[in-house]
Image 1 (tube, rainbow, N blue to C red):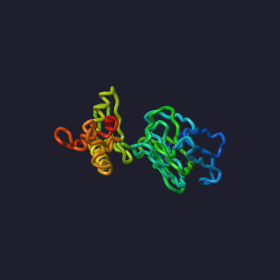
Image 2: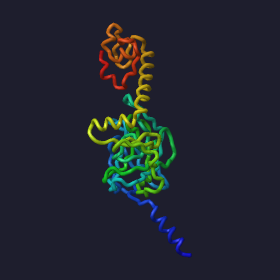
Image 3: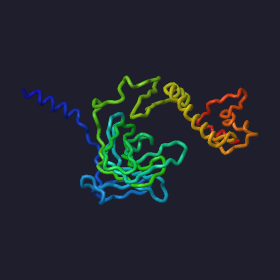
Image 4: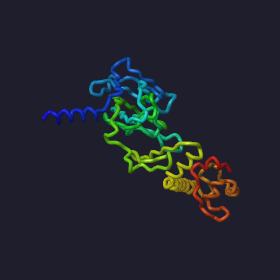
Length: 282
């Protein structure tokens, strides 16, 4: 009769997460490094009685980011980073063509800019956020950001940062049926994004990318074409919209304008490539 509880205890222990890092900003010895913007301990804004770290922009940087202490991970194992985030009048603004600026978010230093926990903006109370990932580096750092990829104003607070190893059998993703493969390359959906892995020489990587994204690439081109076409209509029929050139007598010298305005050899409206600005110099 005592065997069943004992086995249940073993199963619970096997599935328990293993703590890797627990950050507290109460101690002066807590190690963190300001990368961009301004960061300071805040004794007035507490989370469950503990100090928080406040991120703001400064006169030099348009965003703010902080790296926490270096941690040791096992490549290929699954981890979860989590913490509490609070914001006050936090608003982001894109500074380049691509809209990528995000609010207050939690990530790892090894991750691409667009991989992070749920981002917070405007004024939000303390909110718990988390992100599960597979370690790609043996040494990594928790990254706290505000306005990453753009510019921001306002304030963001972080507290109760936690990093733990999680068993692969718990809520494992991606499921095998969600993964599409092509040789060593593969893709799968993740939190509204498409995770794409390619490897090899440049030609091999390009071929893998085109094969696995064969549906999304034309859709992206169509969306870009629609956006630029709208800009042309707003600017006027004598303007290319992708550059400042607006002389209709020389529109043939503007490759982008030729395609968009339908004055090519067959009078077609070809779909422009999204990066034609570099080729569009009149």
